[in-house]
Amino acid sequence: MIIERRPRLRQIVSDVWLTLLLLFFWDVAVTVFYFALPFKAPALPLTLFGTALALVLGVRDNSAYQRWWEGRILWGAMINASRSLARQTLAFLDGDDSNRIDLSRTLVLRQIAYVHALRCSLRRQPADAEVLRFLSAHEADEGLSRTNIANGLLDGSARRIAAAEREGLIDSIQQVRLESTLVDITNAQGGMERLKNTPLPNGYRFFPELFTRLFCLLLPIGLVETLGSATPAGSTIAGLMFLTILRIADDLVDPFANGPHDVPLSAMCRTIEIDLLQALGDPAPEPLQPVRGVLW
Image 1: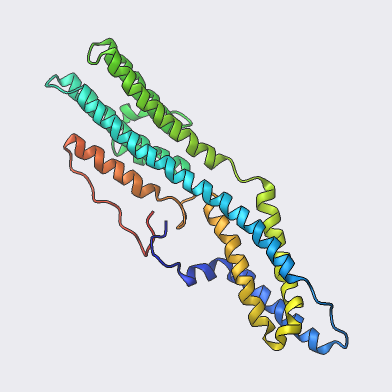
Image 2 (image 1 turned 45 degrees about the vertical axis):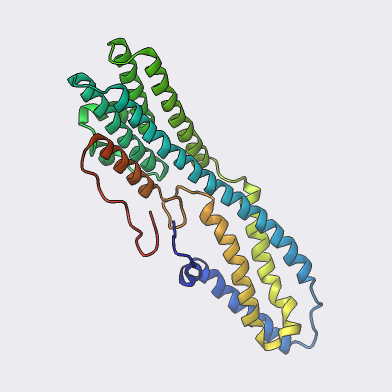
């Protein structure tokens, strides 16, 4: 996620420079033909076309931003649920009994491994190394052997909580409360996977891009009579604005793609890691810092 207050012009231009260069050459060609040919093309209702296109792009950008914002809300819920799970675990299993201490520590470390596994899954990255940073190979095996590693780790935590209730380490009310927190975590994970695996409908993606590129082709034809030799500059600048708006939606539509515009999953997982390790009394790493204005 870019945290600088002002967007970087270099980043914007680098995303659309090739299309912009082709558009500039097209603008030059239209301008040359306008002055070279004996007849003139009829004026185009660019205001009408531009207004309609702006509405289409506005709907698309709003839809993409809603997906980005929902992803951020879901990860905010994951942070809160992880803190709640750690707090409940340490409170319910408090005492000098080694079984209680080992179980509470295991559940908290499993939650840290879980959020890192979920982050890797959403970004389509391998999760084994991240899980093994917090769990032994035996403890992590039930998760790493599953297709959905994060869900496997969460299932294992639920089984350990149920076993703790049978062994008398916690009572049934405490088990229900811990299970309720696991349900909140599962619901947040389900929402994230829905966003990741469900793209915008094809019409939202295809037609705005088609209409934008068509408008950019018609733009110099409608402007050349007014701008004359300045058409390439004016048309290219106008095209840059529309192409940038189109690109914004592409950047936001997948909030977990591990790009500079996405939800900062690594930073939020580090936040959970810090909070839960400190709850255990263990050394915790420093929060992640932005790299060249981007928080990952």
